Amino acid sequence: MTVLSQPVAVPEPQVQRRNLVGLTRDEIAGALAGIGVPKGSLRMRTGQIWHWLYFRGARSFAEMTNVSKAMRTQLEAHFSIGRGDIRALQTSADGTRKWLLGFGPGQEVEAVFIPEEDRGALCVSTQVGCTLNCSFCHTGTQAWVRNLDAAEIVTQLLVARDALGEWPSPAGGRMLSNVVVMGMGEPLYNYENVAGALRIFMDPEGIGISRRRITLSTAGVVPMIERVGAELGVGLAISLHAVRDDLRNELVPLNKKYPIAELLQACRNYPGGSNARRITFEYIMLKGVNDSLADAKELVRLIAGIPAKINLIPFNPWPGAPYECSDGDTIAAFAEVVNRAGYSSPVRTPRGRDIMAACGQLRSASVKQRASERAASL
Ligand code: SAH
Image (cartoon, rainbow, N blue to C red; front, side, top):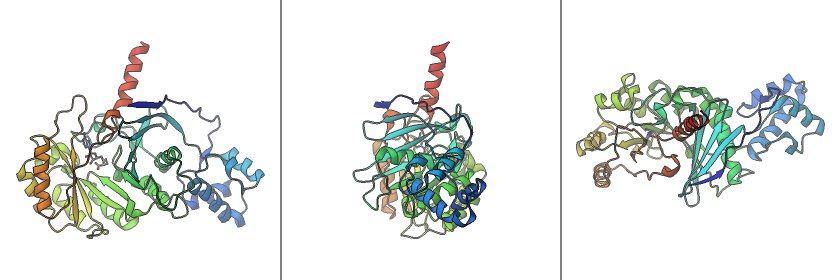
């Protein structure tokens, strides 16, 4: 592991200026009207700002050279577009990068970039902490803090694009080609902010990532699933992890509210569902818990009729975790049952384990580090 930069503290501005990042075009226009921009030029000004923010990746108003100097000074006085506080960046031996972003005292989230050869996915967080308490997930063992707002979700992508040098928005050949909403938090418990951020990601005049390259993962907030399909049209992933309600109640306690049958019914109704747009079922492999051949067969029976792919996730351990990862042979045998039934069943290669950036490991290290810093200062 290489720590590329030590925590950098960017001082908060003295005056609380409104952040324009994360706003819709209408909201930007409203904010501009609020500082006296004439009605007749609101649309044009909004378009310019949008272009600078999301197509060119401007980090200051001074860069917006087609906006008059007087206007730039006025914008600077009232608004901010900064990246906030990047507290640390770590790079794994496998190239995975993890940013620790601070959004207020004690409020930190992580964003992880997972590169492939000629493309890559950014995994974004949606909440500081999580309320779901899944028994195998380290994030869930940490204190719940709050929902992220749209700006904080969008900022994760801006920071990653800055680091990759992908401004202006490249037409093709992007390293940051995909977004997975699979970081800390349950996105469907923060729907409006997540939807706002995803609309910005998808906007063709800005960041321009197609909805086909975005996947949102949920532990199964059934009433919200239909809206994801109808309003956003992004890919859906379901953290299934068990095929019986008694076990799933234990692993994903949200199951007590929305049991397996209801969850799968919502998947059957998912508007985007078709062979071209398969739903991903994530299934964590826990030794002796959910990894038998009988489990695999039941899984195939349960999802019959749903255009699906099964993503088998080797359990990523964390200190004190009550589980172990299934053996390689067991995972292979499980995958074969699923495969024979006609479903693709890729085994997710753990990425960034050395920097605790793998699934279920987020935020843990930063919390630990703070605890040790506290201990050291006593
Ligand atoms: N709350 C949403 C978004 C988080 S996605 C959801 O549950 O889908 C994070 C993914 O990593 C989920 O599929 C989660 O179940 C999985 N995960 C959590 N802890 C893990 C661990 N220790 N090892 C492997 N995968 C884990």
